[in-house]
Structures are given as structure tokens and as C-alpha cells.
Length: 116
Image (cartoon, rainbow, N blue to C red; front, side):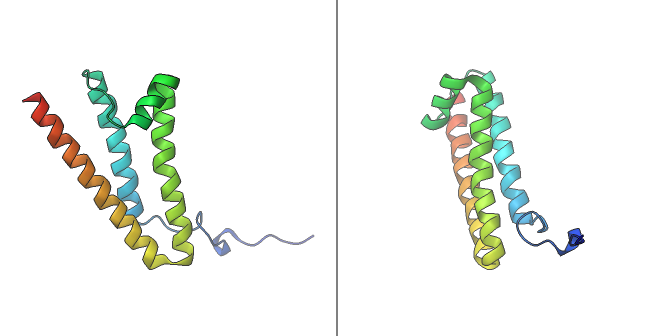
């Protein structure tokens, strides 16, 4: 019988340490989800037509599942790329974080103008 390799010898996406860039992107995505749910509870509507469609077709569970899928999918791709080209993946993750953060800030700014 062959002995299996120790866990610390594994390589790949699941064995890699979690990077600050990845943690930041996941945190921002989850914050966006929570803020969206809270704002919808205040009577606001989902602005993204894809997620609005998921909400109408599948209700809140489908909406949340869609948001999580659209956050997790790109992150898993970036983490796979990190195993091949770590510098490019790190840069891509921070670019994605910056773009997402900017879109979220602009949306909140727009909503603040509507509430004023």
C-alpha cells in the first residue's frame, strides 16, 4: 500500500495562503451584498438587470446565490491564475477591487443624491 503525501506537500489553489487582495475583494463583495439587501428592505430596487432578474425569477435565495456565484467565480479564476502567474493575478485582483470599490462608491453617492 502506498502512503499518501502529507498535506503540506499539496500545491494549487486550495493549498495557497489567502492573500490580502483576495480577502479585500471577497469582503467588498459581501459588503455589497449586505448593503443591497438592507437598501432593498428600505424600498430601493436592485439596479443591475441581471440580479434584478434573478430576484424576480428565484426570490431572495436566488438573488443571494447569484451574487455569491458572481463573486466566487472570478475569484476562483484569479486564484487559479495565481498558481501560474502570481504577479499578474495579484495585480488583477487589486484592479478588480479598485473597480468594484469605485462602482460601489459612485452608486452610494448616486443613492445619497436621490435620498436628499
